[in-house]
Length: 114
Image (cartoon, rainbow, N blue to C red; front, top):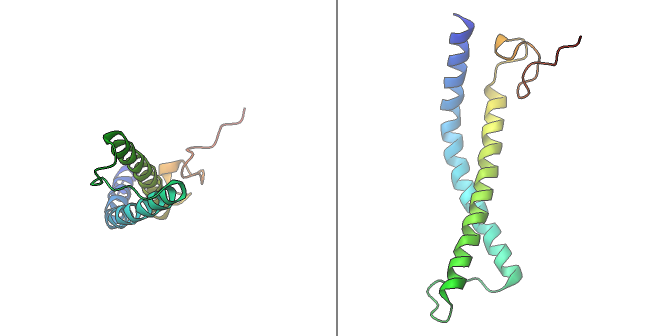
């Protein structure tokens, strides 16, 4: 088998391995974001209720924007950590040709000395 074929199989295996991990991380990131949002709002004020008629549209929408921002940041951090970990666990070893035999999986080939 050629090195390109082996590399393609490794990429496919990594994608397959990440599917269930990605699903679990998606659920976990949603729960983490909810906890972070609730803690943040408890520290500043009472938890908002969008159905409260005494609240203004501006407050409701700004609360929703803050919740969305917190959720997006937590999800991105959890997804990135999961993808990086999966890549490290499924990437070819340092002696294989896909990384030039340098041992640097994430940084590419080592710099050439003159």
